[in-house]
Image (cartoon, rainbow, N blue to C red; front, side):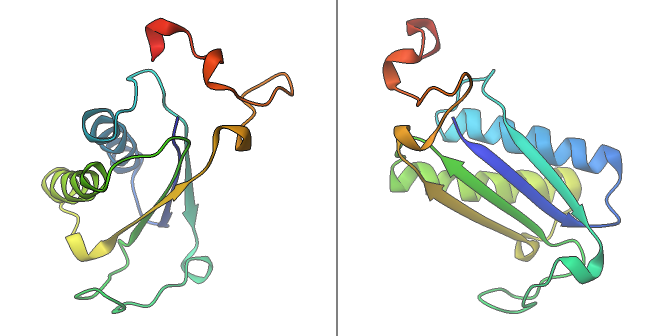
Length: 134
């Protein structure tokens, strides 16, 4: 179950934010082995002075439409799954939102099962997942 924090500056429309969220989820399902119903996202829309970034660090140049995706994943993914996730997100967001690929930054952070509690104060264990959801 990944949890993603989507961070952008003010100026994005509700339609654009929904498209960003939906596209992210579709790519995670297709490339990152996420079940279709497994969707946990937070969208932070920040004032200009609250989202500070280097406009050129390892990029051709970032604009005001910079998007930061911080994906916290509870199970390991292969290097190839990560590579395809990065590529597909960049391609689809460019096509659907005209987002310049230089404006997209993605961080994947790996955690362990015991780092999660989904509810009831219980530490997550793989056996908790119903077999039809694995």
